[in-house]
Length: 337
Ligand code: NAD
Image (cartoon, rainbow, N blue to C red; front, side, top):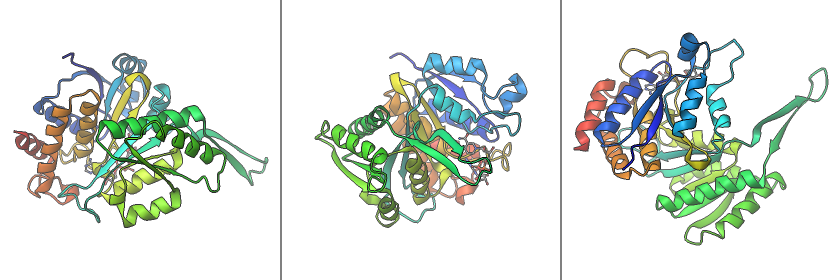
């Protein structure tokens, strides 16, 4: 087996602590990955004068894979968000956010197991907006939806469903009002769905989806949607399972390029104290292992995480537990064997 090389970005705040814990857990799970450690974020500004040094971009260009802890975007200095720049530079068009209830993580629901695939490059986030008049009493933002952009993310959702043994894809839209842009996304979805007769397909208006997600989240399997609705619904889904602290994410581009990251921020209030919860980054690493077809290691890692979360003795303080980062990680590793 060739060992994939992954660009590893430790990030800022609690980033280095949760990265070290995650690397230990991956190795214990038998994950075969080589690391190319590179810099980004506020720390990179201090060291290289740039939140996204050229060497970091070159590394990801080479490896096509990145595991990234949270980054602080330095305020002032006119820096663009590194996360947004990375997504755009590598055309990471599909944002994949699984949401699954886990024993030990306080949440209002049980039995939630869904995945939101969000289009990551178009829609209102294309950044096309302007004030209509010099006095700035009106402004206009333009949503761009293309057949190309819609098709590739919807195909990704169906391929994901097939690969992960999921039975249904629900396309979420507002085509009853936005008949052209959202209508194009929906029409494209129907065309793509016809090519996947083994996967059930339905569509749902976004407002009805928001309600159904909080009444009967178990009704959903894979959701595919546009950028703005996906942004909102993926946080809603994280809320169903206990918040952003334990949520993983993958950003997928063409030709296998993919970046995996925890959804939470750099938690500056607890940085350096050794008490951060590495679950979000560890679950993102499990998505990475799935992506490089090391499903056995991914499954061992998830088993370890589930076991460590299940007991208050081994989960971290943010989840009402008594363990610090190292104790949690030890428990993850113990439970794999
Ligand atoms: P945050 O997620 O960093 O923190 C919110 C709260 O959750 C804090 O109390 C924090 O201690 C806690 N928390 C978050 N992750 C935790 C973990 N793994 N273990 C234990 N507790 C955890 O959100 P914020 O305070 O709004 O943002 C702080 C910084 O992070 C900002 O600079 C922001 O720009 C950045 N940020 C980065 C990303 C990213 O890189 N993907 C995402 C969001 C925010």
